[in-house]
Length: 433
Image (tube, rainbow, N blue to C red; front, side, top):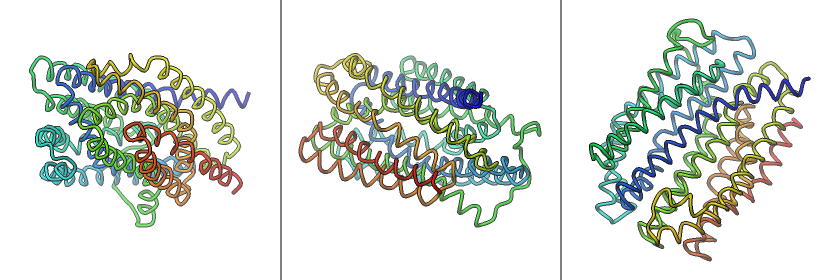
């Protein structure tokens, strides 16, 4: 009975977040397909060059939202609701003001930064146009990602899901209108994303405007010690995103040297597929994060042990299924993005090599989620630095030297495999303590 109750809770928290994330990731693939099919390889490469920079710029929003949602769930579990509301109110204001500044700086510096990584003036111009639209909408975009965490902390999983689905549907419609009908090219792709996510921000904030939820707006209050904890704990998840973005920037640079814009386009296409796969795995775990933190706040450790086993089981099964699908349908999946012969031939094997990554990545993602939910700041930071930065960089340098273009995809697999040993050690140590 106890185990079935835990499984039911797992699905109640995980499924809405997975559906939400799945729709958003599906949009990313559709967006990439629109750009690749209607605007060509050059524009697809420009988006690939832009995305790591955009992810880095929006990482701080995740850092604050994830770190504060853990503290909020811990406080709610410990029946300190008013303190949770003060944290929530402060973080919303902090995020908006921070991204108003980041948006201005990012708008005016994007061309210069991109020019450091490519001598192709047309590629830099297209990438800069894409980034500048995101910078104009920066405060609303970052709020959209943050509200998802706070809605789940209040148990509004389905509302968050519907908000995400609505944003994606609007996004796809705007993609068609701006790219195909109005012929706005890469600017249209950026506008479609920015407008739809901004609408999601307004919808997401509505439930917090009255006092029916556990969280609502009060006079903001924050002490330095708590803010430090929020930033440090959130930084483990955010550091992983920053590291992935930095790895993406370095990888794009290596790809430009080894294969030119078509190599960047292939890597971008694979990352589009990867975004939906890993987004679903991470959404499964992130959806349950408030429950993990609540159990720790209420000292229900045995429930967390069962919940963690449930998360591991379904994460492993899902990842293995994805691995098999990618191997069997690699050609068809890559043709979604481009039908050119050279692209298809190179991309087919690249996706097969990269797909072995999923056999190990689910455990590393599970470990990162639990360490963050348990407020294990030092362990979480240590794991993120090793797993998402140092290990990938070392493997990238070694395997690119040995196997050139395909070595990039092999390095991703080896990096995830080596990281699982550290993941197992940290999880075991966490429960012993």
